[in-house]
Length: 156
Image (cartoon, rainbow, N blue to C red; front, top):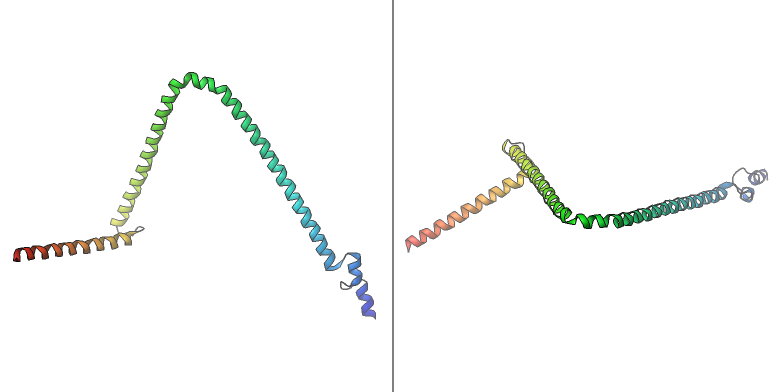
């Protein structure tokens, strides 16, 4: 009887604890409330941030339209000069980018060749050696086949 009385007063999560909101059930309810509050807080933050970004996007769009409206007459007046200049700049930029890219490619090829020739075993050196062996084998086969045909032609 004493054990039953102790359980009812809060000794181990009995019926009395459930009535007061204690025990495991009360903690689960509290965690659910906190989870719901966190979800609501996240949603409110996301809505605020999204709305701010939408307003900022609209302002930037309006500013772009206004700037384009103001700049259009200037572009029309100066277009005989600006269009050829833009084409020239685009060609120069393409030339510099191409030149730089080919220069980097050449340097990397020279670096790879140096490593290969000095025996430092760069990446794909095994594939190159295998391809070289296959090419030499095919060259021998072609040479032998040609020699065989020459011998047949001379023998006939």
